[in-house]
Image: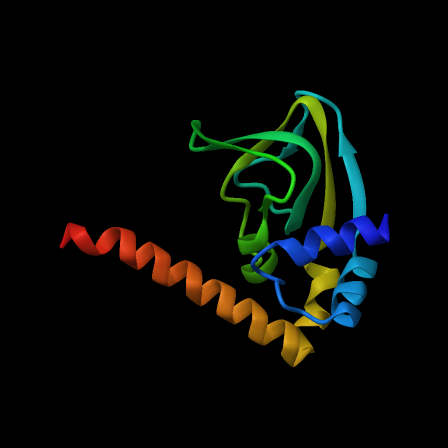
Length: 141
């Protein structure tokens, strides 16, 4: 599953452009987990932290009991909690076919933040996200 995990990590904006070696190191830090259909993967407000990348299946997302767009292969969640250690900001439930994710815990990820390549790539992705959010709200002024 390491190859599949590495491939999944390489597709997400947080890690896009990392070297093969660094992606392999990241893939070795996590585990693959399968959640049966309809089961909760994470719950809003929970203290567990870590990133999960969807490998197979779908997930239903809600924030404050309001539905968000469904997630599928290549999507991810938990990146904020993985970085800041704060409680989960959404509830995620496995879709009708179940959900297989690659999980990277905050504890396993922390040493990777010492790698300048990872830190730089992560900062660029987060800056792009901030710019995108600013662009969508700039018309509200």
